[in-house]
Length: 442
Image 1 (cartoon, helix red, strand yellow):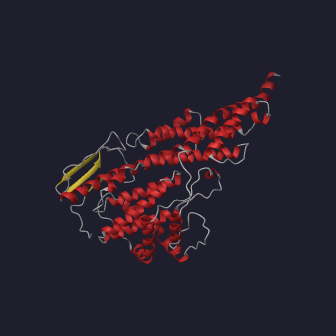
Image 2 (spheres, rainbow, N blue to C red):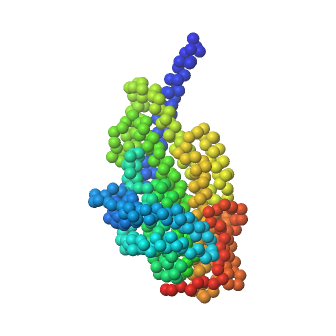
């Protein structure tokens, strides 16, 4: 009889335990989610965003939002871009992977495309430079809804590729003013995306930022403010913020799937307060409903809570870890062990995904540092007529225990990172200058 009683009561005790645990943990994690989302204000779309979207349709790109007026995508332009999309992506990847040395000439098919759509690309650049920064809708609370049409920004990625290609072509022709104008438009557009907290925006802005910094290493007469801009960027922290945002977003979405209370809330904070109040009522009236205490929904609720907690614990660990002190494979192992120790088999992101994105963001951060030092050396050469004998502030901010090594040999400089064990980086961390600067037209 005792064995039968234990077998009969075990599932109910397990359900009761899961319910108690989930309600105990939910109030605290809901407060953490509310504190995180409270950092981000709602953003309403502006005229500049619609203008950029409509210019994009003339290049064959789909807009990021729905608009009242008719939106017609140029089918001919769409087909033309489709033909050069892959070659363009490969060409930019090859050029931005170069640390130094001359860039390859713009291929004939890409040059023909630029000639055909130059006016439209220039129109987009002028809109970015002369108008307000475009801003597309972002309402964190609505993003909890799986049907919310969050912008994918593919058209922005395509437009950025065309603007950067235009900058390269102007550089080939020695047109410094046009080159820098295109780079400025690319920078401003990227800032409009970078200030969004979602992971898609963070990944896009990080990729474009790395391409901008790589191209700047090849250009001459780059204004000094670019050094300040690059030094102010923090690709690793930005990506971690994006992962954190996505983790909380997934938690909120999962919360809505198992919540017994489906009434819409007016804000994130009111949702949390309502959750806390329900938790309090359930504690003061434990016998009000047996289904409240013995619900199978407690397991997915507890699972989503643990998934969020594990991912945030992993992000907190990585925030204090630099790319030079530990390789990616060791980070994966560390995150996997952390997951095992906490007994959490589920996470919003796998250990491999988090480690890979952390490593790539660290690569880009180091490449940004290298670009900043190259620009400083080039500026000094323009001002002094010769390469400087030394550069200041060569300590690495990305890797606090490392520094950049600057060497001047005759009329050639070399910049490299003191850490020699980093392999497989997106950009080789060594710059060797050309023996002379090319002539440029002002």
